[in-house]
Length: 146
Image (cartoon, rainbow, N blue to C red; front, side, top):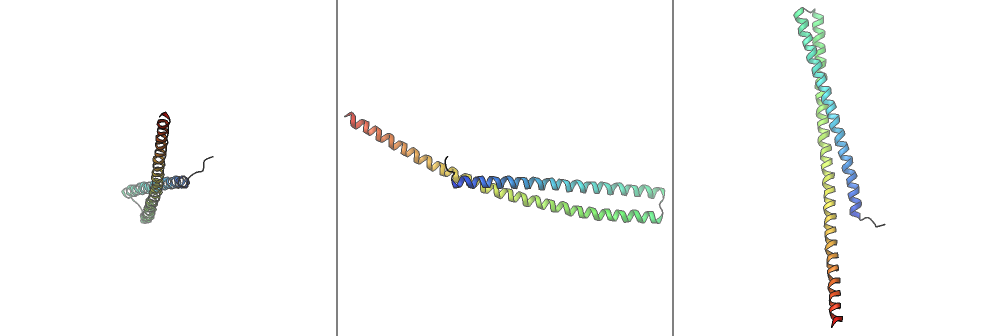
């Protein structure tokens, strides 16, 4: 069994880090989508409730009914504001996860580049050695031919 080079080990480690970072980014994106869905539901519910207030006002509401409607709309507005903050936090987590993924991917690509350079140097050395052996064999053949 051939020994793995240290750079190969580093590449394997960073590939796992890249995979983990990509999974984290995916989770952050899904969480953001969920928070946006909840925000949209709250806004839709608020719009529906505001329409019910208008419909009720057209038919005639008591003062307590009107106050209850306004109070509930204020609570919905507060919930919407809170959910907007949750969405913004989720967007921030996406940015952070994306930055982490990009950093790990950059590190992996750097290790790949180093490994490719090392392989190129090794191939050049092997080609030189092969050429030297070929030259020596040709020189011997010529020497013994004489």
